[in-house]
Amino acid sequence: MNLPNLISLGRLLSVPVAIWLVLSGELAGAFWLFVASGVSDAVDGFIAKRFDQRTRLGALLDPLADKALLVSVYVTLGIGGYLPNWLVILVVFRDVLIVGGWLLVAGLGQRMRWEPLYVSKLNTALQIGLIAVVLARLGLGLRDFGLVVVLTYGVGATTVISGAGYLVRWAGALAGVETDT
Image (cartoon, rainbow, N blue to C red):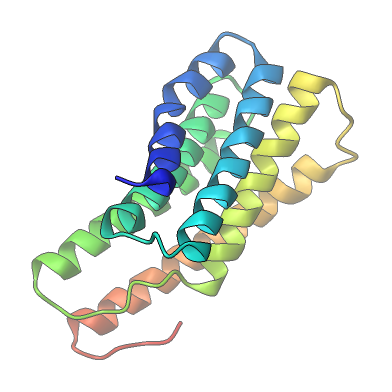
């Protein structure tokens, strides 16, 4: 357990606090916790790379903390009526699909690259942006100038494309053929 892993663990432990803040209507606090989580993600990554403190635990803990936060906040904002249900369902289903596909391919002993797809990186960035804008609008009273609508459809489109890309990748791995999607 090193400093980057402790930072990731702290981010993971902040998930219930983020959920509580949104459900309690403390949306400004949820916004600032979300910003702090983003900063902590950058800091733990910087420390791990700069000071050669990358570990197997960190390679699992960091994305777990990120996904737990994103999915939890999406579900909570959906329950609160701040995000459309169809979008929340897409985001959650894609992440379940990714985890399920990983378990299936790994469980069958197939070899496969596990780097995220480019479109998945874009999807994650758009997901983060949408949460930040929604929480800033609701918690800080900032005007979004229609950005929530644009980000909502951007997240929806990249979620579908990303999910399809992973399905193609897994089909290739299960067939014994690596794919570059």
